[in-house]
Image (cartoon, rainbow, N blue to C red; front, side, top):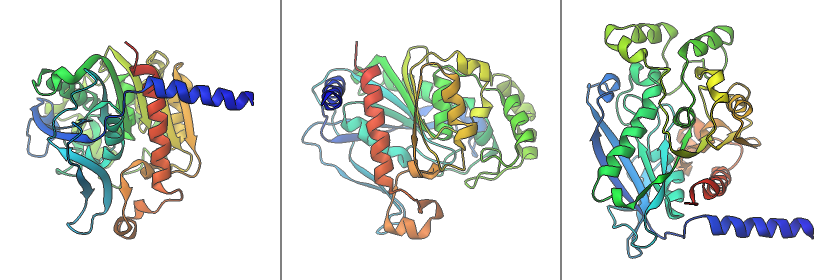
Length: 359
C-alpha cells in the first residue's frame, strides 16, 4: 500500500512538472549561416539546416512524416503540421537542442523531437554538415566532433533572433538531447571537453571496440583521419578541439546510447555538474555501454543511468516500417521499437520535467 501511494504521488508530481499538452506539432525548416560548416561540407557550403518542432495552434492540420521512397516508406517519423502557427497559450517555452547520430539527420530523430514538442517543448535540431545522409559525407564531417556542439549553439542563437520563433523561446530553460554521436554532443554541450588523443590511445589498445571500427554509414581509416586533421586548412580548427564548447546555462542533458565517450577528457567528465540522464541498450555493440555510456555515467556525479534489456544501438532511430524491416538490416531488432521509444520518451519527459519546468 505504501509503495502504491509513493508511485501515485510520483505520477502526480510528474504531471504537475511537465508543460501543458500542446496538441498538434508544427515543423519549421530554416537555413542559417555557419562558417565552420564549409570545412565539413563536401561543396564547402556555409549553410546549416535547422529543423524546429513546436506546439502548434489547435486548428493546425498534421500530415504524416516518413523516410523512404514514395508509396513505400522505410521509416515512420510521426505527424507534423508544416509551417503551422505557434500555439498561442503557454508563453515562452523551454527549449531542447537535439543532435542526431553519425550519418543521421534531424528527421531520423523526429520521433523524439515531435514527442517533446507534443508535450510543450520547443525542439531545435540540425543536420550536422558533412555527417548526414542528405548530403555527401566527408572525413572532416566525421572527425571534427566538437563542431557538432557549435552547430547547435549557432542554431539556438539564430532561432533566438528569428522574429517568428525567438519570442516563444525561454532562453533560461534550455536542455539538450542526442543519440550516439549526438549523445556525445550532448555531453560536450554540458561541459565535457574533447580529447582526440585519448580516443586514439583507446583505439590503439582496443581496435575491435565498436567505436573504433569503421562505421557502416561512412567507413574511414585511421590514416584518412590523420591526413584530414593534419591538413593545413584543418590545423587551426583542430587546435580548438579541447576548448569549452558548452552552453553555460544548460540545465539538463539527455544522452541516448552515447558514443565516442573515449574521445572526451576523463577528468572533464568529473567536472560536469549539469544534471545528466543516460539511457542505453545493453545489447549495443556499436557504442558498447562498458566503454561509453557506463563510463560517462560513472564519471558524472549528477548522472542518472537507465539500461534497457536486449536493446541495440539503432533501436533509437525512427521506427522502421514493414518495408524498412525487410530492406534494412539495422531494422531487425529484438525489442519492438515502439517499446524502446516509449521508454526513452517517458524517461525524457520525467527528466526534463524535473529540470526545465521551474523558473
